[in-house]
Each structure stands twice: as structure tokens, then as C-alpha cells.
Length: 286
Image (cartoon, one colour):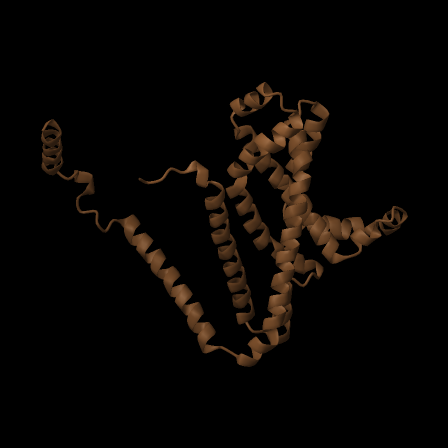
């Protein structure tokens, strides 16, 4: 009875409260009108692109260049996947060095992360491709010229070093986010540090870092377009070659669609992975 009376009183108060003066006559404020206009422009833009592709559709063009687009797309995926995996392996010692109490290791890891996060990926790619390639005899004496003479190897090395710096910071932040009680509990059980890290700390840290890792993967997919400048025929490389042969603007539209579909698939796949790995952290709605 008391609950019903309280509910009734609350409802009466809400109904009796007048509408704030600041909210009156603002159904069509300047900000809302601007937002609607921008949304309408974007909708018109995408409709225009779809209409352009429909109106200028060329079956011969698609039949000729579609396999090349697909090969370039697979090249981009292969390059990014390998660099992310190798960068993840390299990020472990870098993250450890960043968290180390030894000043030398900490400074080296900090310098590495600072350089690769603070400079453009394109500049790093040119530095490796054009800079290190000038020391041919030196690399030949070390039997490492095979690494610096090939565009694909240079692109893979550059991407690996770049993403390792970002992944090291992601991993470091995730590890620091693990509650200290987990570490103390493992120590109380007498678990070795190696087992504590890989069985207790790392699994929890990876769950925290899952979303940033997905963002990093997507950024690498979009950033992979720069390798076309050093003659790696990825998706953008094949697009530039198709445009140079046909001067057809729709070549870049098809490339944008490829990138957009790829990013959306990765995003959806990452949502499924995150939902699967964090199922124990959610409570049932009932």
C-alpha cells in the first residue's frame, strides 16, 4: 500500500512539473537543423555514388580488373595479418622493457615506442626502403640483403615495427589494469612468475586489450595502402594500376568499397570474439 502511494505521488509530481523554459520552442534549434542538413548531404552523397556506379557499370571493366582487385585485396590481408602477428610477438619484450625497473631497458623501450608512434608510417617505410637500401654491401656482408632488396619484405618489416610499438603500449596498459590481488593470490599459491604471467595476468590483460587490438588491426588495414608507393601490388597498388590504364574514376570507388567491406567484416567478427570471450563477465538479464 505504501509503495502504491509513493508511486502515485511521484507520478503526480512528474505530471505537475512544468516543461523547462530552455526546452520550449527548441524542436528545431540551429544545432538540430545543422545536423539534419549534414545527414542529408551524406545520404545524398552515398546515393550519388551508388547511382554513378549503376549508370557507369562496365561489364568488361569488371571482368578484366575484378581478379586483380581480389588478388590485391588478399595481398593486403596477408601483409597486415603477418605484421600484426609478428608485431604482437615483438611487443612482448618491448612492453616488458617499458615496465622494467632497470633504467636502461626502460629507456630503450620508451625510445622505440616514442619513435614509431611519433613518426608517420610512410616516413618509416621510406626510411627502410630508400635509406637502408643504400648500404647494400654492408647487408650483403651480413647475409641480410635478401631482407632489404625486396619491396614486400621491407613493407612487412616496416609494418611489424610500427604495430609492435602500438601493441606494446596496449599490452602495457592492459597488464597494469589487472588487479594486484590476482598477482598476490598467485604468489600466495607459490606459482612461479612465468606461470603467473601466462596463466593469470596475460589472459585477463588480453580481454581488456581486445577492443584496442581490434582497432589497431583495422587501422593497419587502412594504413596498408601506403605500400603501393614502393611497388607492392596490394589493393591500392592494383587500383592505381587499373586507373593508370583506364583513367576511370570508379577504380578508386571500387577500392573504397573493398576497404569498407573488409573493415566492417573485421568489426563484426571482433564483436563476436569479444562477446564469446567475455561471456563469463556478463550477467543474465533475468
